Image (tube, rainbow, N blue to C red; front, side):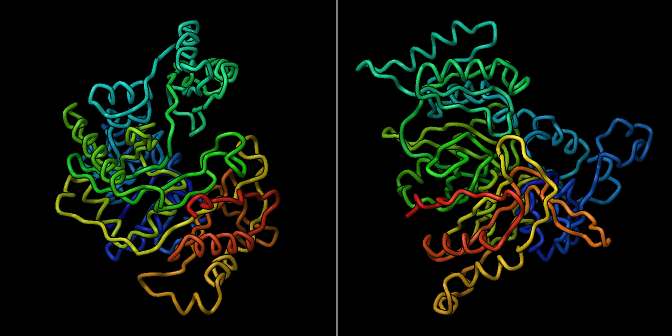
Length: 463
């Protein structure tokens, strides 16, 4: 197989490494990729912005670079990593050209691309979620009245309320306001243009109470194959303080999830897939549900239409089943009868970010210590742990690249440098969370670049 992967983050590096394990995969083209994908044995980074302008023939002149490249290079599967190209309709174009594509068409991608569409969809099909209202800039007074209604508790106290920019905002367009004043400020922030067109419409939600976790599943239209639950750490600083980020770390599975809750979440994922079929949406790709486990059962906070980041970096390393096979079957609507097999281990992933993230960051700083991190992480627990390691219960550490790139130094040699806010993911698999946390942070300690910072409490809640 020749595969084209679209994207440049840690999620895409984890996907590339997972695909590369398949003996059926010959070459993985990554557009644009990052410093880590450039170093993978089967992978080749591409700049598709400059790829072709006239296509294969006259009627191909308006085709996207992705389609032109796929046609010219006998691509057997296109995997679309981020949400933006899905919401832009890239999967529609590729499928119309009979190119197998992993990722939903635009009609399915609206589950993430429009929070209003997602909430309307859930209410129409009886999928449990929070009460909500939708408002534009011209409806500010009505939005304030809705906020006050959701904030007012029967005992006179103030409930939190959730303010969401309707469109894509890089994971930063959701604000949980604890007071009326914070809610008013959040509304003004959305309407100020901070999130561009995404904030021109806002969704105001009642704030659900409970325990939050995520579930990701392969969906080929009718068949749903869930992965283990995971929990992201969205806030920038220890103790879940500071601004929201794209994610500062993750762990999986989630010990606090009961068997009953797991069954209920699986049921909701299947009901969602069935509802998409009812709507005439042929959904093929990843369905991601953010859940709040309330006293009344799991409720959906949001849907995403692609692998989460950094959830992917703890989920895919545990997948023993051939990822290329699963993705290909998903793209072709052939998942029925397929099962997923997992390594018996827990996963912990810690993000190393640039100083200043999630606000403006400086880039271009040399990165050292990645090879040492891998060895240090695996040796974190000493000879006794090494002796206990088996193929089914490993202690393994992997480093995934997100905001990195390769450049030539003054001697003409390639060096790895920072190129974004979230720079690296250090992921450990181990039999227990205590071991995985120790291995991950031992690996983190070996990696250095100017301004590097991490949260120090990733996965501690799993204990």
